[in-house]
Length: 404
Image (cartoon, rainbow, N blue to C red):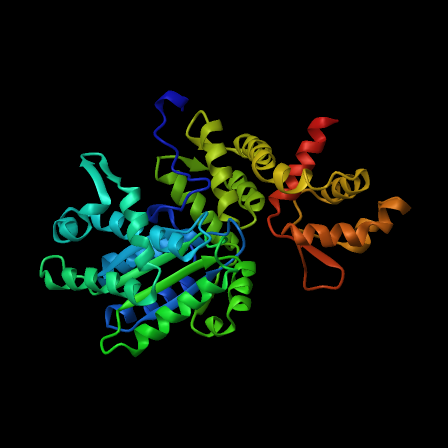
């Protein structure tokens, strides 16, 4: 299969997985959809915090549930990225822009809401529309207030509910990329205020509010205002099981008429370690490496090499190698990777055996530093350390091997 004859890659490294190739997460999605979207469609406000490590698929899960909420439960889906925002006004601006974008993507819905949101749009065409950032910024000052925030969502919903053809039962609002505001008390108080004020309203707004974040961001949020920890139903997102990873590769390659040999499939599953970001990177690399429509063992090994190189440039270098400049630290890291480059964990005892005395003295500080960098966490067994993303270990091993 020559590259010129290939359709676009069905894999999406670094992006939310499309609904078509979304697999697994049955229990998690069922919980959010049944306890959240369905209940909200019946008039009950609900709140969820989707918690998991970086690249584990939190955004994809939220996006999938949003699609189901729209298609099966009549909710208006809104996804707001809070990336770079550090103030409530910035948060309000991001949500307002997401609200306008959601309204405009449906022609019938936009006809109902155009009058309300027209001032936020500069121009519209066949290819989309251009937001008026100045108008958004000016109005966002008002919507940083809890009452006004609930008011704009409520008035939007009232207009949609009044239209029989486009009747909407509630709102499914996803707040993603919350790193900049999670530790800010004003954000935690705002969230608690939205929930409390809405609960006391004569007619509570049917709102399903879903936040996505890492365990660290959840901890920041609760430490900023402890009562906020009691208002969310926390949904843990763990690595995909092997059976789910196999289904992911089979479905995604199959969507473009490609097949995977059994041995190659097992290699891709093993290298991916249940990490959706890595699975997409591996699949994308194998897709472009393949020349005959059949992913074989050679394609899988080439994909591993390409992914490890890409992962090193994008994540390992900036987050790890640039931080660990000590010769002894580099030597310890190299020894970890050489023990077994594909293993997701190691023990402190087996690592220490291959180190010099000077390196062993620095081992505890080294492990603590990698824990701070969110590369490692302590395992269940005594002395065990586990990679948050096993590809880190493989990437450094291949990088070291290539430099020899």
